[in-house]
Length: 426
Image 1 (tube, helix red, strand yellow):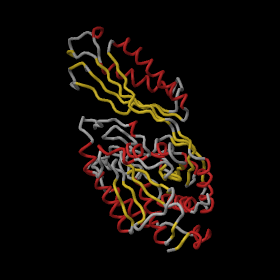
Image 2: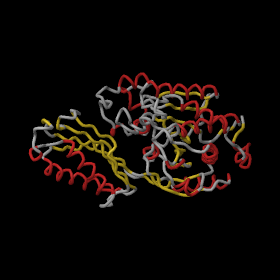
Image 3: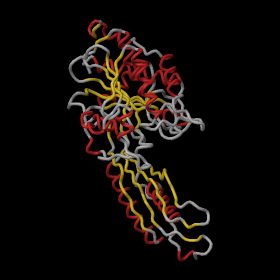
């Protein structure tokens, strides 16, 4: 076994991941949950998600690494024989997807972390701070609306999670979590001890256009936006579509349209936050000749500033009262998620930039408009994020893609950053 002292700085800098192996794994994992619409549908705790976990665990075992699933359903990958005492360098992302999403979001970061661990193991290197890979459970919240489930549990933030979590159809999480290898009754045991993570690194596709338009392969993330999410329920009154005069209607769909416009106005003409989205809309009873009696809308706001985010949320809730008065419908807004904006660690930003420079990869610093497990882990450890370009800036769609050379480049930066942190020199 080779120690970091024996391998030397120059030799460690010469290490590279196996690009062909990484790309193969990305292709193979992308077939799990492939749907007829051309994308990937792999919501957390589904059969497809469990299959993805099994694939990653099998690949890790084939690389001579050992895996375990904790009480929250997180997959943890470690060295096969023994561990080095002291804080670890944690790397990873998530395997679950949105509905009809892409094959890279989350999955790329997990497979790159596995590739880094395998490369280090094959080189026979023992680091002062052991590298550990993680596939966090339910980052997206596509089926069970508790996003960042796994990272909150691992970091001891279970108080932010519901006692009786259920999916969007009212089904309890306990059973699916058990099938994935977790245990809701023992969820608190998923929390790692304080100061057990020296640093957390997450490699991810940008999900936006900045890197591609700048013709740069690497992004050094400076901040991760905060989010406020509401489930808005509109209660009107059903009636005959042909015989109820317009002035006597309480049309939930009309009220819903005002809610959507109010959300958009919050981010555009009012300029209170970076972006606002009404992403999930349902109307009932859903018949052509019946005035809608109920509507449900998910609305979220994102910004890098906590103050602006709070202002946007307060303004939106105030507008809902005005919509209720205008339409005669009862409107209730339940805040289902609030995450604060999180800056990445300045030292890790500099380290990632230096690693990119050493590898000859151009880079820029930029904020993340998407939420990531990194912002949750930042509560307990220094956090750094590496971005690679998204073609046409697209993500959460079947068209999500990144050039193979950029995928390999990002993984090499992750490797060098993990080696630098693992030696204890940085």
